[in-house]
Image 1 (cartoon, rainbow over the protein chains, first blue to last red):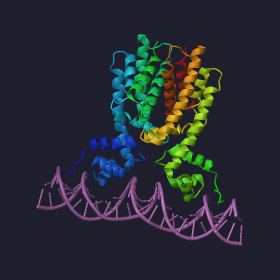
Image 2 (image 1 turned 90 degrees about the vertical axis):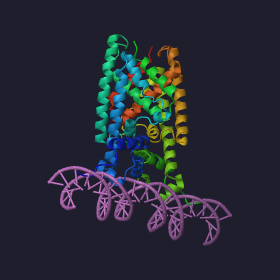
Image 3 (image 1 turned 45 degrees about the horizontal axis):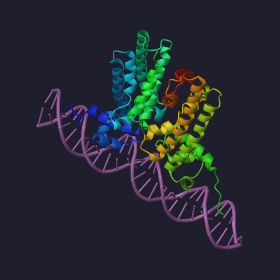
Image 4 (image 1 turned 180 degrees about the vertical axis):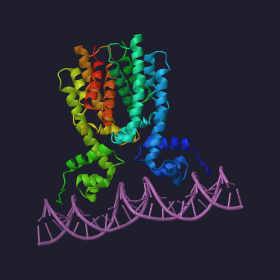
Length: 193
Length: 193
DNA sequence: AGAGTTATTGATAGATCAGTCAACAATTAT
DNA sequence: ATAATTGTTGACTGATCTATCAATAACTCT
């Protein structure tokens, strides 16, 4: 029994995310956020708490969406190795502008390091999910003979996640689609029997 | 024939670098820089231009030093493969505090992307030097039979540089020494014949 | 010693920062 | 209709930001 909110909270977070993703936390002003989100100052503070809380909510929504995409690409192909390949290749967004943004999660690692407990918890959750997803595919691939059975599955999984990070930073650094696909393919080939 | 500077410019840049490295450009205030560097405001502006120019000089000095270390580790071992191994293992600083800083160059990629021409030029120069150094070792290793001759040397080099990036971001994310060494070793083993 | 040059110091400008307050508007329940 | 509740609006606060200015200090060369 009160006045209803005039903006869509989810959409507002989405718009905030675009700014935080592109410029990081410190370089994104609340004024810029208000303009991008199309809301008033007090609306931001009453709906989201403060700039930091909005950032955390943006990060969570970003990670949820991106992680779902990763898992989808990883698990859709029938072949486990093709799943790994799709995961790594899929890091490179086809659209130049999107690809150049890199990964917002890695952006927060670079900006805050391991010092922020809440961010660390969010990242750990994502990493756990990705690790489980990838290691399952690795083990499947080893059983199927696609992936070298001599490899330690956990280490191979760490390797895939490490490669994802490298690719994401490369994208942010301006890597083109072709070179990213080449690097992804090379890494995938390092796993084959 | 004028009053001499009271502080050592090189040392002042070194101190500025520590701040920029730890917190990035945007989150480092000139006040914090003055305190850390132990100089007055006008001294900073007349000696370095402005905050951004100081950042660029810090970055250059950082990249020079770090790149020299990389090349040293890469080229010191008699065995080319051991050189690659030393390069990757050496990414993980033994000291926890230093390791947690990650790489300042990658920090600038994350903060500014490919949008800043001056930063891009500096990074490109480093990447070229590292690429040449690594590919030379790769080719040596292939000739010596240590490294799989079927691998495309350029792609293998890209792979090594990509792994470096992954390791550096992992370090910033809080990875411990052991896991970094494990990941480095795994990557190196992917190159062996 | 004095002129010329550069560094340091302290004050301050002007903009921008995150966040709050108070008045007003829109809705629901009674 | 009216009370209660919540959202919106715009002004505003105090802090902090980068950068500059003017005055003073330290040095070298003649």
